[in-house]
Length: 254
Image (cartoon, rainbow, N blue to C red; front, side):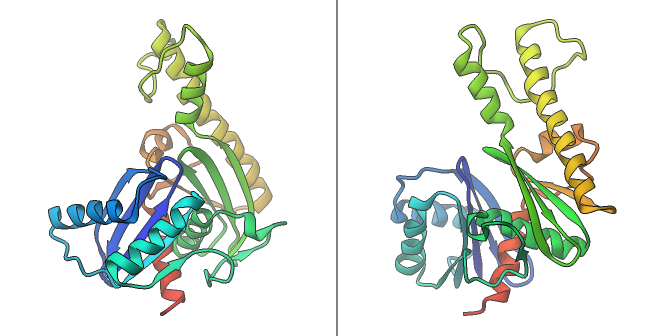
């Protein structure tokens, strides 16, 4: 069985695939100073509670938090007793990186691009809603040709509350009224609607650069919140990066 792990700055997405289907998928908070033993305990607890056997034969990792790479390498080698594939330079992904500095493209973006290309086989853009909101443009011939990066909606909300003395932290959801009349809804309008508008605008510009038709898929733990507010997004796949890791693992057999 394959354990796919996508380490982001705020959360870690994990999934176990048995060669036919995902047996289970879950998210946990990213803790850079957590040890391999601690992650092993968490993994055993999750798999046990969901009736999935402790029988991982390979780990595929996309990581944007460098200190955690050796932690997951130790998890694979010492606790799971299996090889690990760390997505990065030299790994076959099926995606041609047509950008100025390919080594700077995050492994999570490459995995998302691989999954989106397999899904559509045509021009597409992946919007990943996380700590940052990222936009990855992929052509119909499988080339990653552009990326945009914006502050994530939660990051923007936290920055606003931290920098403005009289503004509180607010729940991330659209305001009830289209004409907000209190501070909480006013902030929700600015943060959530504002982010949705920014995403919509960036997508329109990137779609013009790719040329029509262009499919747009959203992923990340905040995708279900924001995608319904953004007309340019046509599909939500919260676990898209894990699908990409599975595809990449298949291209790089042990």
